[in-house]
Length: 221
Image (cartoon, rainbow, N blue to C red; front, side, top):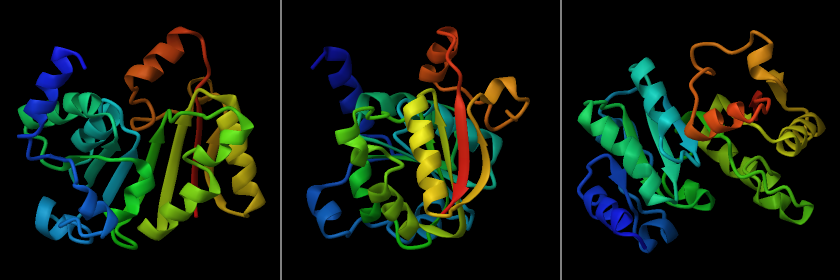
């Protein structure tokens, strides 16, 4: 592990907006803010929005800046990535944002049923090989995780540059008669992008420079 990563891990351990749970908290679902994020951490009764696989936290932080009436939590297993968004939030006193370092498979250990209003999936690994489809963050396995967390009117947003993931997700939604709020395979050439959707992650900037189209789906479970 590089010296820079070690330094970031050491620094992040002192961040009060980053949580790196112990195994027992995950296994026993005993994380102290589970079901209590608004009352005991944010101390504001606002809708809670998750970004799963948040990377460097660009989306999480920018949404939090633009919508102070909501609370945002970014989730990723890569601590060195989370460090950037968490540090920026602390330095700029953005108090409606937090981060959890964990695998998405364990997401139900950190949130109670109906605690979440929105979930963002921004450029997740498409797991293109068919035999790895169950690892896609929009697979039935993960949608069942999200279903427990989201309240009745909760929505899921997917942004991706990957045609396989976009078509797979769209087919799954239609097959299960889920409600599609919006769907496009070319976000920036349709006039559909708005103040929220135009937030760009590091990876999205790279994809756009390569001439790739960005697809977007918003749907309810």
